[in-house]
Length: 389
Picture 1 (cartoon, rainbow, N blue to C red):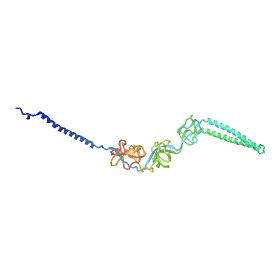
Picture 2: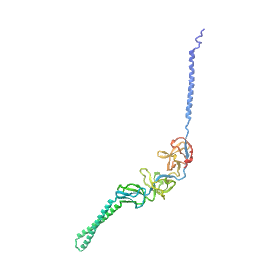
Picture 3: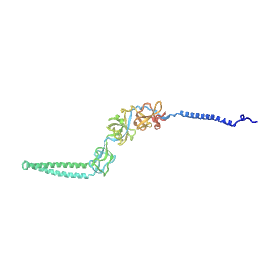
Picture 4: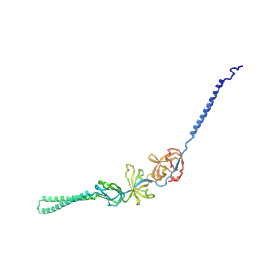
């Protein structure tokens, strides 16, 4: 007996019931994915960058007066060019570069041929004028005697007096021309006006030189100066009579006392600095002209800080055209680029006059690897003795 259609199992109905369970699995899978995504986003937001470690120390004033250091050069107080007072051809040079000469010593000669001819010509003119003068004088004496006896006319007597005066004037003129020609011959020999050292040769044997053209440069013996160029900020501390200490790289370990002798009244148009000349007191014989020097000025009264800060040269940075250092702000441990004023540059350190306060932390290494506002962690230097003042 066949079962009724309504009671028989319906495969189609069974198939239509399976899709009802699939959306539930899809919802669970999507929820799991969202949970993982949210967890991943939360973990990225929670990771904060670690502070960058920097080597920095707290700085303190040195407790000594600030000193400004300027490069200089040893020069003679007086240096003059040696030149002929007449033009001509150099036929002999008797000294060379670096030679020491005495006052009045002959250093060079010109060809004297033309000057000697001028002397001979002037001498001949003087002889002729002297003969005319002697004749005019004899004629004057004869006419004077005749005039007293009224033997000649007054007009003739006056003409005799005029001829005598003209002969005397021509004689004096010829004598002066001879003296001038003799001077021209003497000027063909170049002599040193003062004792000193030949520092330059500007003309050679066989060269034709004009009047006043330098042949040598002579540095006078005696006082020795140290010349340096000072910026505007140091002018108030540099006055005539101000003392300084001079060290010479050629003479290590030695310092010499010096005193400001002259300060230029106007700045150099190119460098905008002022030329300062200092007299080196009691210089030893080892000090040679042209040596480089380091001039240290005490600028305590020049508007700078009472006591400078000495920092290693590795801490120095620059902002625009001014020197600067990185300072770690207290409390926030962030970096600040602080402009400073350096008054002295040494081999491994610099002296800072303004821009820092007592106890501030200054970055000593890696100044080119940090940036303004960066959060840092201060660590002490591995070898503190390398950064000692």
